[in-house]
Amino acid sequence: MKFFIDTANLAQIKEANDLGILDGVTTNPSLMAKEGIKGSDAVMAHYKTICEMVDGPVSAEVLGTTFDDIVSEGKKLVTIHKNIVVKVPMIKDGIKAIKWFTDNGIKTNCTLVFSAGQAILAAKAGATYVSPFIGRIDDGNWDGVQLIEQIVSIYNGQGFMTEVLAASIRTPLHIVRCAEAGADVCTCPLSSILGLLKHPLTDLGLEQFLKDAKSMQ
Ligand code: E4P
Image (cartoon, rainbow, N blue to C red):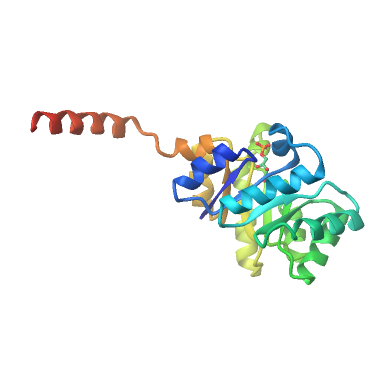
């Protein structure tokens, strides 16, 4: 399973990238706004900086909701860097635009996916990635990981090439469960990635080893 970081924060992207286990980055308009980025020139420059930091796919989301707007924004976004993936919302014009991008060799990430039916449509349109938002599903008292399992099973059975990108990750356990469910990619906040490191027995064991090592000096 590939690891993407789900943020537009440069310090967090650097910290995850320095670990050596980062495969890519996803952003969304809320994450960009959180960093105080304003205006299309600043947005484009920020994506360029991220692409120069991480050698892997960087999802940049369109803001338009009509076919023409999505296609024209996407065409502009891919001029930033070869690793840009155009992130398109799961709406009717979004599906039409994903098909257009597919036919024109442009990679896409179909976002805001909450059902298997939506994931089938994204795959039919040729999306490179489909992003089911598992944390938001859990928030509504449903099981987000179950949706990942369902989509993985459908894609495998039908031979769809779209990669399942588990999004809206909230905890380290989400990452583990998505790996078990067969997700191709997990896009996570830095806190969830770092949370994978933690185990009290590791801390206790290391403390003892260091103590014993000192007694040998
Ligand atoms: C996906 O690509 C989105 O950016 C993201 O995972 C949404 O997560 P949230 O539900 O924590 O906002």
